[in-house]
Image (tube, rainbow, N blue to C red; front, side):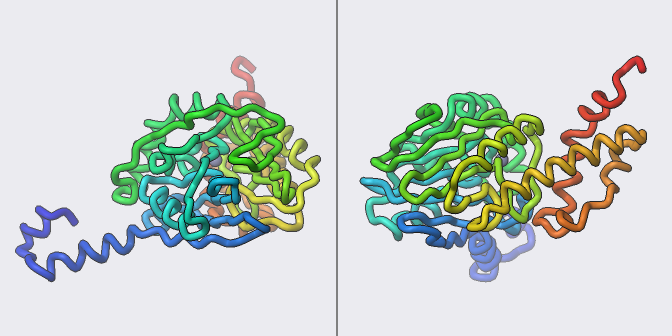
Length: 314
Ligand SMILES: [Zn+2]
């Protein structure tokens, strides 16, 4: 409720301030670092979609001990989230954050960059370009969905470009895998010391994969690469830490089913609304953000699949 609205109701003093305090309390991110390996922490996001309830905190963040501070992989959905992440990092290492990496340009992965402007913010060149190209449109959408959670958030694209292969960030060695498919530019990192694979949104676990920027063939090829990594464990972009390696196969199985189901629906002549009514297989129905994420995927992908299956002029 705005101040003028409160004034118009004649609420003054403590009674008027109470709702404001309650609203401010609701806008607090409660980030809990989970130590997953020696010198590596993960903040696990909610597995539902962006909402006023979760403040957009649906992404997994990884923090790794560097020589002079913490290397943070992905920075969250808002300025306020970035501030909470920065404060949390100070609790783990009094020297704070020494570098940030953005795995890709989706807003929940880089809209916290603003608070880390004093350190290098690394990403693939394609991610940097996409953040410049799409960032403001993403911001409009996030402000529309998340309202006050986004207050003060500005789009700060990555500031330094990395390439594939050997990569040393603040004294810590990684293998950088420049891939694509979830978006046009997806970076996965293998931490040399621990063997952890930080997969970004190429890998989801028990949470429905999102497809607004997806190229399914490229995504499958990327998953083939990741399946060939001898990882000790996987940090997916969304969903729990994966010590058994099931997340890559699960993501792959879902994408395979999604494409086959939508192709079949198009061949049967179903329209988009009818395709949204397709029954989800048992294996996917209990994933986080279902069935809404499937409905969004139909909206993203169906007309393209229809035009492949039913070329104009046939
Ligand atoms: Zn994403």
